[in-house]
Length: 172
Image 1 (cartoon, rainbow, N blue to C red):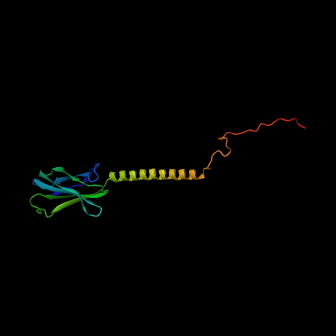
Image 2: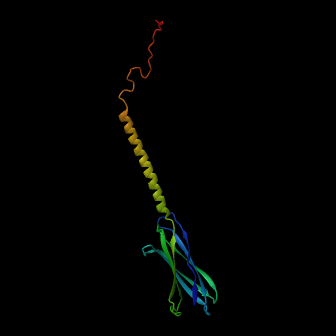
C-alpha cells in the first residue's frame, strides 16, 4: 500500500504566449513491507475540462518500506489559461491492480496571471488614450480656427493702440 500526499505546484511564466510551465510534485510513502516501483502521470486541464499542455510520465523505482519520496513532473505549454486544474495519477508499476486500488488521483486548481493578455490590455489602453487625446486636439484646433475673425487687426494699425492727443484747455 502507498500513501499519496497533496499535490503542490509552481508556475514558471514565459514571454511566449503559448509557453509557460507548471512544476508539480507529490510525496509518496510506501506503507507496505515490499519495495515498490511507482508510475506518476502529470497533466493539466482548462476550466472547461479540455486537456492543456503536455503530459509527463515519471517512474520512481525502488521505494523501500516506510520510505517517503517526492515525485515531480512538469507540464509545458500551458499558454494563457489563467485557471487550470493540475492533476497526477499514481499507480504501482507492473501489477496494476494488485492492491485493488488501480490509480490514486490528486488534483489542484492553479491560478496564474496571463501576462501576455495583461500586456495586450495595457497597450490597448495606452493606444485608446493616445487616440482620444489626438482626436480632442484636432477638434479643439478645428473649433479655434472657425471662431477666429478674418482679420485680426481691424483698425489697420497692426494692433498698435492709438491715443488721440488732446489739448489741455483751461477750465472755463
